[in-house]
Image 1 (tube, one colour):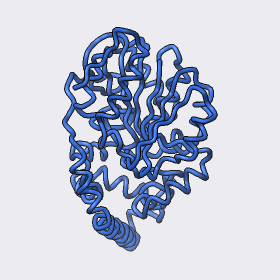
Image 2: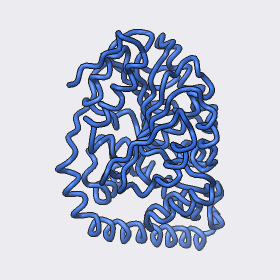
Image 3: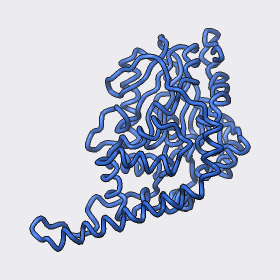
Image 4: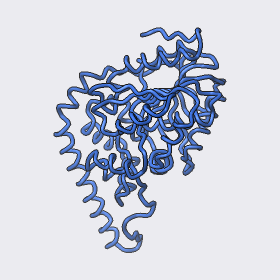
Length: 346
């Protein structure tokens, strides 16, 4: 996830009247767009200055390399390592791709097959013009696993928004999922709480990911100018490996906004989590402004099948900054797949 989360969705209509015959309207459009771009540039400059020390520290902490294996294109695009009907599935967050899970996670193929997809509408997966509900995402994941001959059980590891899809997959297909490991899960008791927490992240997040009338315009600009958008992302998040930043631009307004509205903003995942029949480990950091640690502690305290691990000082990119710790957590979960599922540390 690019941590440009949203809690409400921008209207699909433009915030000004569009006329192809009136030069004045076109001039107004251009002027307003320049004002919006100026605000983004100003925000980027401020964010870059404010995050300089954090970015330098992150660069020192992140050791990332691209994952190995083969690629598959079907219901979804995916990277796969190993073989067999069981294994580990890794799901990325909003605005991400399978690149988020780099080579450090390839050792998980010792548990069977490692499947790392691009979610529906992101990366190299299909980008339909609509259809990004939780059910749509889960159906695409199930179709991919069927095509690959992965009949389960599998352990699903997920980051951020992917955690919500992992929980939904375990709910809809308990025969397929043996356990869920959710890193930095955006679980909230209600939409109002989600809105308050996400809006507090900063001006850039509020402008690009709330219901600002400029959100769709800015998203369209990103799609038309991926190189320029990547430069902006590099200024805001210089510690993130460039392939991950680039893939963060590879989505559509439909996939981003509808996935946000139907999956993230619904705030239904906590209720779904309560009725799961499989073990779920929540992993969150004390420096993560996206997760609601108080609510996660409440869930872990009330639900016998849910545990919570809190990593001191970890932020929302915990799987990037501490891949060895994340692999160790996934390795323990993979033992549920049976004695043959012994993960060999890299």
